[in-house]
Length: 328
Image (cartoon, rainbow, N blue to C red; front, side, top):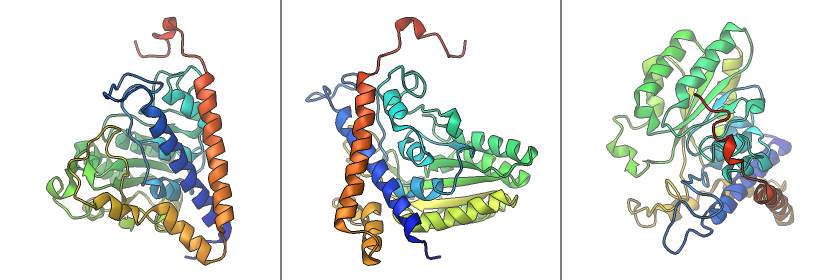
């Protein structure tokens, strides 16, 4: 399917937006933490898991979603939420732990919730998969045309919650799309020594649902596969699974020594950068000039800078608010 200019440019803009946000967060994260790495220091304390390199998956899937389509994400959630349409200011403020953030500064980067976008995430591996199926069951019972999407990594595809959820989704013919982001490593463990099948797409057959593997560095490939799966779910034809083979550019977490990588591995994957792949396609078709590409980059840099300023200038929650909005 040949995509039109407007769609391809929208996808390109989203790839650049996510990358720009993540790289800026990565730079700010190290403020005051070095030379001796102090995880509690700086304006962004705690762990940080960035999405750089995997942008094509979030952009390609979420381009088909509406604000009322539920999405569950992971401990690496920024790309998914940006692609869903979050207010960057509120998201950045939450990452800084500020009162103006999505969760009033109480969630941080791994616990981003936006009710207006029906989006949630968490640090428990695979924790969002059953939630997406539950949302999809509710959608079906309400006879709506909404679709739930669960993003998770290939490591999560080995836990019980994944298998139970996919089985129930198949039994119920629930309108849910499972998106496996296979970035080759579950923290530092390669799939080859943790998973008995070559591809998690093979597992779809075990539960009677369509499944496909796509190049997760190619946003067009992801967009096409996701479009088919989401349209199928909206028609009431049940769940699907998409396995996107991708790569994280910054390690499992910031500060990861990455001693498990092979020599030259990261450099070879950066030759398949999703932004460069789509940019080259657009330029070959005469739909994007170098000047236009720079203008898009400048626009996204300005948006992220505005969000950063907002976050830095926002107040922290008052100490007495610590017990508000939490489960007793």
